[in-house]
Image (tube, rainbow, N blue to C red; front, side, top):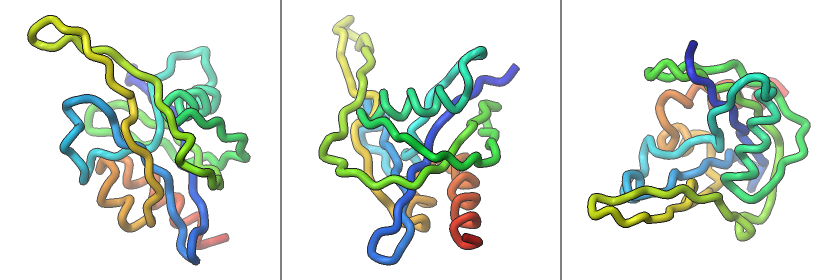
Length: 152
């Protein structure tokens, strides 16, 4: 059975353009990576946890902000690794200055425990720029949202 992640894709209208909120993973591996490194706020879940509840929980853990919805179901995407991402879009606009992420620990080569934020940055991007920033496997989520917004 494939691993599954659930996440949220907030969007807003800003200056006449649609924007989406993406997160940048924390930790030393991602520190100098930009294009293709960003993601929707998401995380793994296991049944019986409902995927939408997992998506809301993960978003709050990674950003410090709870989104109330309503939520629009996007078609799941399968990454090259086989992992499936269940995602929901929601219109939201909030001040990113209140951003705070949970942390994780890594033991370095010298045996020292280091703590890093799970997410070190969040940012609003226009959809075209987001398509360059986001992990390639998640681009279909942006395209789905763009199609929904164009038809609304």
